[in-house]
Image (cartoon, rainbow, N blue to C red; front, side, top):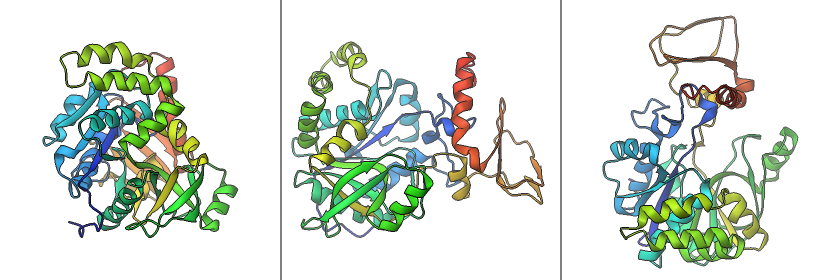
Amino acid sequence: MPAPSPVSLDTFHAVIPAGGAGTRLWPLSRASRPKFLLDLDGSGRSLLQQTWDRLADLIPPERIHVVTGAAHAQAIGEQLPELTGLLVEPSPRDSMPAIGLAAAVIGASDPGAIIGSFAADHIIDDQVSFAEAIGQAVAVADTGLITTIGITPVGPSTAFGYIESGDQLTVDGAGSARAVTRFVEKPDATTAAAYVASGVHSWNGGMFVTRTDVLLTHLASLQPGLHAGLATIAGSWHTERRQQVLDEVWPSLTKIAIDHAIAEPVSLQGGMAVVPGAFDWNDVGDYAALHDIGGMSSSDTVWVDAEGLAIADDGTTIAVVGLRDVIVVRTSDALLVTTREHAQRVKEVVSELSSRGRADLV
């Protein structure tokens, strides 16, 4: 249990958007069994359960909310028996409608609420530093700024977007907070190296902390149609018409990520802040990342003058001879062979299978 934060978390709610199929981790991750439901690091807890655990260390279960699709609602309920705040989307509309729905529903019953959104499929090892970052982010968000937690880079990665920080802010309880100058898309290797060397760039881990009223006000200005739809849904949430309104309104909502809908434009208006996340963080975005955390490699693999990651979830013994940085993944119905260099391209396999009509494999 981390030391108590000097900042009160009494108004803080956590939102966990649990969506996406994790296509770069095919064939382990499927549409019916996405990566957030899997124990990828051998901890005995799925990535979703680990996310729940670190948040439940800070706030009571009734203030932790999960937004997911109907296909995964039952599995999530089974993995998180203490969960009471489950919001089920009729179809995927990306992160802004998911987080916006949670903000509208939570804000309607708790007008002073501050929410933080945290992906369901990330691994964070340092709970004390995580709690410290949350405390600082809540303190800054309370002033009316939308706040993100910038991950301290461990190297010049091209797999992540970056946050460029500016002037230091003066906020009680948030001595490390800075204004956000801009968000930058995934760079090339040379640019990434320059960002890390600059000392003012952090990785964008997709963690945002904000007052619900502030988020919804920005959304009304920047995405008025989306805001109106979410307000209509939230207004019926605690009535018998909830499902009817959801089914009618949800398909019309703009499909957009929170980065593009809110973070990027609000940062250009001077409305975004960043606090450092000085903890070990991994988004387990592909098999190279899974190899880095030492996750899931089959213990009975035979390596002969070879190195890499080999996983057989059907118990098959894998032998690798004379290869470096190889990735071999076997399930009962599929086999993947690639290299660390091409790990990000595994999603192309899913696209090809989908184009062939192989829904049974994706």
